[in-house]
Image 1 (tube, rainbow, N blue to C red):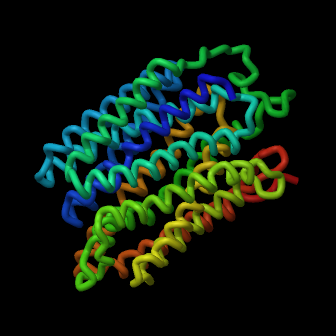
Image 2 (cartoon, one colour):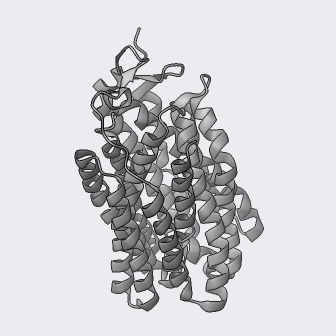
Image 3 (spheres, rainbow, N blue to C red):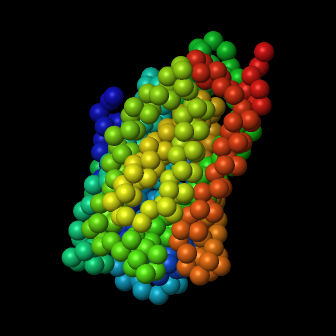
Length: 404
């Protein structure tokens, strides 16, 4: 791996340390119903912006500028969170973070895939996601301590650490020039013939996006309630944990991701597993995790479903992004990743709204909501099972059945 790629990963590790400010502490700052709307609006704006920014990135072949815009916007909103108090202000801040995330995530992912064309896709994407997970895990613990003792200064920490990562990214990472004669740019398959996956690119992206939608509807619908569920008193059906305990518990998820991510990337490239099987692992793991939340009454047992979701995300993320790399050229890669993020974002926007109404319908029964949400990924699992097959050796894909 070259020096520039290492600087890229370092910057993403540092930036990811600030991410819990949005997904844990901003949501925890709100009441449960406002929290679900914050998550929902975050993903609504993320879905729209992912498609827009990724298309512009591919058209202009400029990844870095969109990433910088996203980082600056996220850091600015973290500062705004420090002053925000009303439901409207919190929802507005969450929406803006969604725009910032969609500006930097798919474009940076596409850029990193172009920086190391000789490394197998699954292995390469595992490097990208492992630093994000490790940064989140470290950031969760540090931010939990800051929140426990200094309250809303946790958002100032998030802004500061994002700007530190941005500085490294701006100085050390450069765009890869586009060359029409480069083998990676024209995307040859097995170095001899046009990539046959390009013919079914649109259909595979739709299948993948729908599967991601079902997964994120379930998981983000659950996570929109999760911090409040952990903090709520046992009389209200919660687990009655303090901020540091919540941060440590959530760090179990990210720590597991950090440990599992690179081995999972190798599994994605392995000829006996491939993209599809590992993708199914990720969808099934999410389904089981959210259902398991509804069964737990002893706080420390929550460690085990957190480890499972920590296994499921590396499986899903590395398999899906490697598959997208297989079926795209440099001219369509950011868009492919943008649609992947849009599928996650649309599911992530619907999930909290579903949770919101289920909470009202069940008069605040967290466990009932988790059980209903856990049914949704079953549709995505069935779709992936029947809609396409994969040649695990060449990573060529066929619709509905294997080509004879």
